[in-house]
Length: 233
Ligand code: DC
Image 1 (cartoon, rainbow, N blue to C red):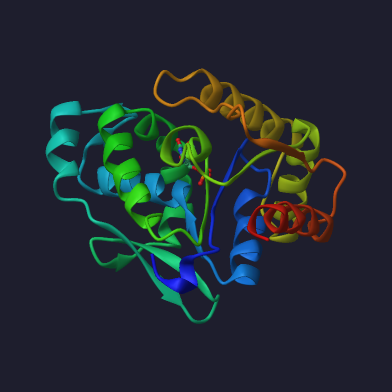
Image 2 (cartoon, helix red, strand yellow; image 1 turned 90 degrees about the horizontal axis):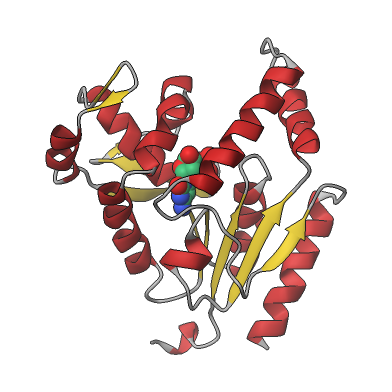
């Protein structure tokens, strides 16, 4: 390890969907001059590949074709000077926008539940953390990817509050929305993440819970930063 890495740690942020994990993880990484990796973006990029390659047809996954496809998938990140964050690339193509589309969102949970997909991505994620100085968010970062991470945070918020935040975001973008639909979708995703066989969403025994139901972004930022300081100095 180089001198500059001596005090650097690994920060694992896991938790439920729509809790604002990536937003806060990005801010913390920027403040600490750490690398931020959105592990969900990696599962989304694999899903995009599968949709394009016809691995998923009408919601059905062709497992033998998927196994073959995994050999051809290379996920990397490239710094985007406009946003000052890393965009995800699929075989060299920047797909940061495309992975947020509905078709990807509708199929990613299924793809992320497949053991071979997780093995491939977990190995890459572990490699990215070799020099520490990384903030990674996801579902299994503190439990599977970096079980020895110096700081593990488990983020949660009341489902109705998460739904309201998502609803407000969509209304601001003039997208047609129904609050009950959003809430139902959040509850379904929580259940799926917690009950899947492969690396289900769990709080690591040594993770600290951040319930941000009634916290501002600044309060969350300061809270996490104080936990980092306890571990680094
Ligand atoms: O955080 P997100 O919504 O972008 O995640 C997309 C999907 O990937 C979601 O179904 C959960 C899954 N995921 C996972 O299984 N493990 C991770 N480390 C990150 C995301």
